[in-house]
Image (tube, rainbow, N blue to C red; front, side, top):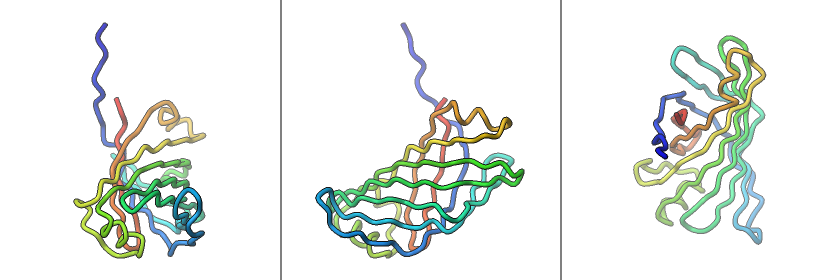
Amino acid sequence: MQFPDPQFRFFCDASVLVAPPHEVGQTVHGLRRLIPIVGGTATGDGWTARVLPGGADYQLIVNERMAELDARYVLETDGGDRIYVHNTAIRVGAPALIAQLVRGEAVDPAQIYFRCSPRFETASPALSWINERLFTGSGARLPDKVVMRFFEVL
């Protein structure tokens, strides 16, 4: 039996604007932070969307090298369709670089491993195919936003 190797097709670029984090503090699982999502944009092949304010990125700084991210927010396309985004990710780097990111400082994205597994959900008949696909992506944390590129796994 032969299985197809996964291929990737560009889905969209997203730029998600964030506010300063709400620090929960050091818990038994790691440093907990909640980062409000306040806006942004997404651009796909032939479509654009805005990131609606009100989402959040629930972060767990597991150790000095790694963070687990769990972002949830809504996109509204230029056609008025809404897409719920649930994006889980890991971000790994040298301890000094991760400390800079936690403080909200700029770090060269090439120095950080940031990979994600977004799930998209919609009620739109025109976009219903995204409910039935897997996606992957990579990203970078900048001082005031997170930028990501998402791909459909074929």
